[in-house]
Image (cartoon, rainbow, N blue to C red; front, side, top):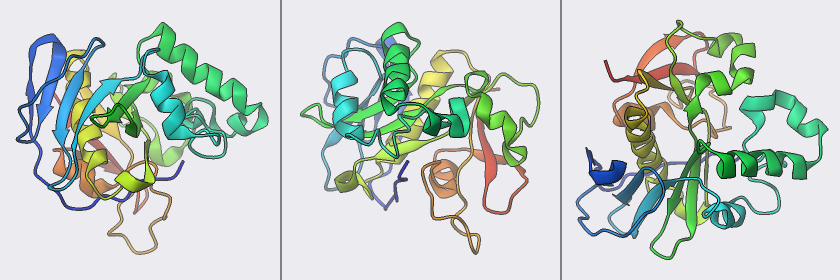
Length: 233
């Protein structure tokens, strides 16, 4: 999946609201949301506010529009951390249906960032780490301990929305979603772009964006691939 590149924008903050809603930035406007955690975010000084919502059956068409015919990247449909390379070995439609079933049956497999018109600007996978078995096959990303953490393993941001802190809004909304779900911590596996020779494949997000959101490094087994956590304890 193609990864976003984040730019500077308005500072964001988060506060719990009724019905697990969270507000980001200085925008105090509101809209009605019917599913799970929602958020309003001022993603940059020049971009419109976005709402961050769990992926549901109602929002599936917005995800289809965001991912396009390629399923975000090479027919992945955000199944890599579930299946590993096996996602390449089966029809792309099967990956698409697997993600759709998760959205319909619940719990929501991730979050969508939507603009005021309902167009999806970005996506992140958010789920208990136990639902992402392929993570455990990577020695650099193996569990740090036996804490039942939630994970944010990947992102996809629409090209025109990159550099507008959409990833930051998704991260902060993911933290709030995990908090509401009583997770002990939420974990990520970003790329540390400050390391010489770091991969240019940014779909796991960047360490800088997670650091801005309050995540801290808890392990670093590869120079450019820290394991970062936001702890609720």
